[in-house]
Amino acid sequence: MRVRFKITSALLSEVRADLHRPHAFAHERVGFISAGLSPMGPDMLVLAREYRAVPDGDYLNDPSVGAMMSREAIRQALEWSMRDGHAIFHVHTHRGRGLPGFSGIDLREYRKFVPDFFKVTPQCAHGALVLSDDAARGQIWLGRKSEPSPIDDFSEIGLPLRAWRAA
View 1: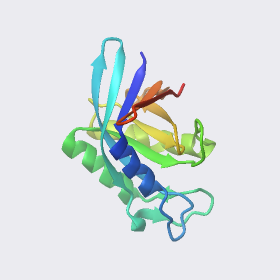
View 2: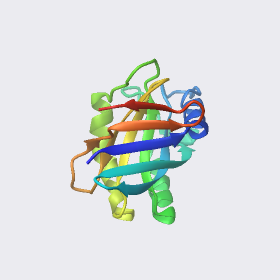
View 3: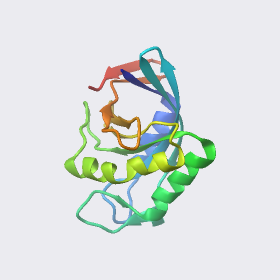
């Protein structure tokens, strides 16, 4: 199965602008994107809907990582997913140009909390994204016990239309 992630230029600009803001002690910002899912034959289409930033007060002062969210930040994202029935994707940026990659810390932390979203919205897939200034890479979990799979293609919907392969 190929996974295709689509996001409007306006929403992607909103996400990038928020993630580029400085924080009092965190070295990077993080947030969540809600999405709808649609099967397309053997493929899955992920349609980004809305972005929510992690509030300043929900960052933990942990100098060993770029940003550490509190349990409250995750609880709020779980509640959002449950209330609206949407897939949720954690998002952050590594800045720069070109295809970004997940750090070892990113991968370790995602394995801890992304599967929790299946407790509240088991009918959805959930995942994580890392953005650069001109591309993205993502992972998607199709079930609580499943291993993450790469998101294969990203499309930025707007003028001009942009698309790139991430896997």
